[in-house]
Amino acid sequence: MIDTHNRTFRAGAVITGIMLLIILVGLVWTPYDPNAMNGAAKMAPPSLAHLLGTDNFGRDIFSRVVQGAGATFLIAAVSVAAGLVIGVVLGGLTGWYGGWVDELLMRLNDTLTAFPSILLALVLIALFGSGKYNIIFALGLLFVPTFARIVRMEVAKQKELDYVRSARLMGVGSMRILFVHILPNIVPVLLSTIAISFNNAVLAEASMSYLGVGVQPPDPSLGRMLNEAQSYLLSAPWYALSSGVAIVLLVLGFGLLSEGLGGETDA
Amino acid sequence: MGTIAKKTGTLLLTLLLVSAMAFLAFQIIPGDPVTKILGTDYTPERAATLRHELGLEGDLSARYLRWLAGFITGDFGISYSYMKPVRQVMQGKLAVTAALSVLSWLLVLLFSIPLGIALARYHKGVFARAAATVNQVFMAVPPFFIGILFTYLFGLLLKWFVPGKFVPFSESFWGCIGYLFFPALAIAIPKAAKTARLLVSSIMGEMQKDYVRTAYSRGNSRWMVIRTHVLRNALLPVVTYLAMSLADIVAGSIIVEQVFVVPGIGRLLVASIASRDFPVALTIVVLIAALVVFMNYVADLVTQYIDPRVRLS
Image 1: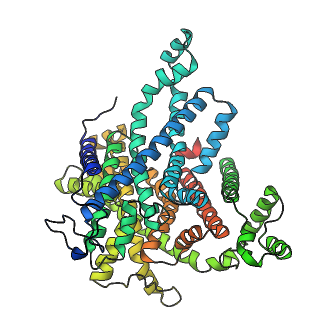
Image 2: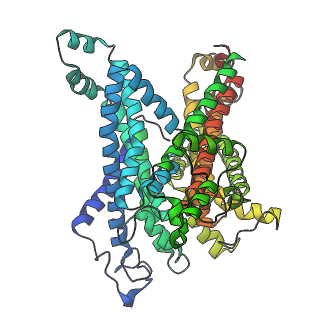
Image 3: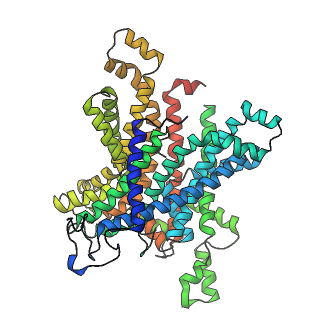
């Protein structure tokens, strides 16, 4: 089963937990209104009044980072969830039934892996346009093959095992065996894939938004903040540093979780 | 030799599939580029000429075959934004990205192998443990954030380079390499951290094997065992990973070129997607994907060459 007592997993859980807590609190309360401009306090360095300083419009960076992290997290969560659901159903069905559909989907899968994920995301953005919802759509689509491949492999392995055979002999329906009997057994493998996908989703969203083809103003995002912050590097380095570190913490937390769950460190 | 022929066959087939998929993707975009380019100058005659020039005549399969034949011979079509051959638009940019990627790849190689070996050799020491933790953090830092930090630290504060002022290759060789050094390092750091991590776990995995116990029983020290017995086995997956990561690095340079304003194909790709200049975007996407497929093929062959077990089976 899952070994959740190792140090890597715990470190990941702590970092992710703290980030989640800040994000959740940020949904109902931030020290300042993230969009409130304050002409009197432009580019203020970090202080007690503004923990991470203010930006070129006098907006409180801490509040903005919290809001941006929330937005980035939400985008990652929805896209991973979408990829997971579609991937599990597709992978489960093809792994169970096999046949030419299975062959075809796997070939398609192999071909898709030839495109680095940032490249695929860029192509999808070129096709559907930028913006919050298109990013979610593009990333969700990106994760389908990952989950489908893993579920398919596991189902193909499990379907030869005795418990599946006996369930069959007892007359249990295919769908019930697949999603009630087999699925719980592949959850451990799925968990580490979910964590690494989260990691990739945060990175991809931040990269796309940084490039200016992701989340568009006025929607918040850590990547977009980093892009804005680059113009004010000399006068307000804390702006870039805060949004960048928030990205690192999200990525690091999920990376450690995935590794602690016995998954790959790179995908 | 039979396996090489078979692998080469698969390579060609995959390349074909990849190109078809990318071509198809850019075809389903709604809108007619001819009407868009001509705008108010639209006349049926002009439209027909332009359609011919852009290679937009005929049905999908005919267009694909014509595009593929052109692509193989180095004719990538005509850019919608510049109304020039894509080849001319890309002139010089490909070399910049190639230089950046190779430099970055060499840096990965330079850092990761010694670091991985050292971390595995002293794995119980306080210093190695601290270094392993730092390594874990480096794995999580996106290259574009490192790039921004470098711009601030080395560009704005220390003034070792002027951010945004790229030195062309033709102007000064060392000046160009010097400017590319920081973006290359930004891409290399997380990649090197991941490679080192892979090498450590590969060495640790090998250390569990029987032959290691035998080597120990003959009185070898831990370092001797690692150096003479374990390393050559442990490096196998790392070599494969390094071969495949060259393509990852090229993909990573798409973003980092933006940070440092490096005039490579990454910046061109982002610009072409923003301006919906699809012939340019398609060309770059297919070139990068083809590189990925090709490097996977090379990695496969290299593994086969250096590992007799794979070679014989």
